[in-house]
Length: 231
Image 1 (spheres, rainbow, N blue to C red):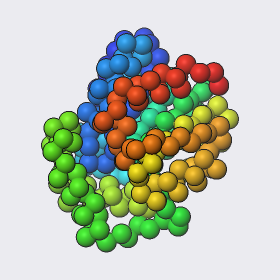
Image 2 (cartoon, rainbow, N blue to C red):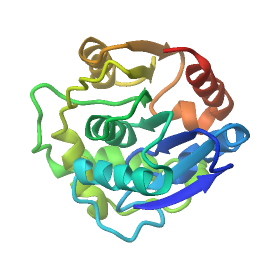
Image 3 (tube, rainbow, N blue to C red):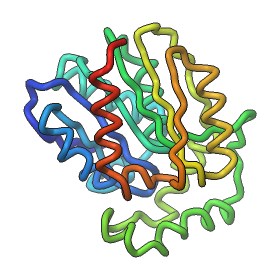
């Protein structure tokens, strides 16, 4: 995992974690706005972007993030947000680290009950090819890893089950687009039931990752609002 830090390190810390197949640039536009008042951490998860370490598991990504936050910021962080894979890492980090208080922003996080760890590779490849066929996305993100390099990521995501968050000081804001697939929408409802102090918001007319990539100004406003509201 590689880390980029934007803004004054003395300001409250916000972490934004990209989705599978993307990199830190997914949140770069929103981070520029947030960095005026917050210290924004933009990781490249293992197997993505500038990271040179192979992806092993969602849990190991969360461990690496927690270690970085403890080392660089004494474990003090206001919000961890993420889309898809990034949201899963955010959930694991929240369960691993006893933050005094923590906001979670979970965008399009999907999981299946029961878990299905053996999704056929042909199905995964069809889903992933959609990224490569989107020229605008490639212009924003840059190079996209080959499927063979990310197959372990997709398999880990298909087997993922969110942890139980026991802290009453963790507040989760769950969002997804109205155009997202049924699995994402159902997962949003399950997370709402499972997570204490959580809310669910549906973004009309948006699909997966549209909020960060197509509407970074709106995303920044949503994050400012969540960070400024009282627990």
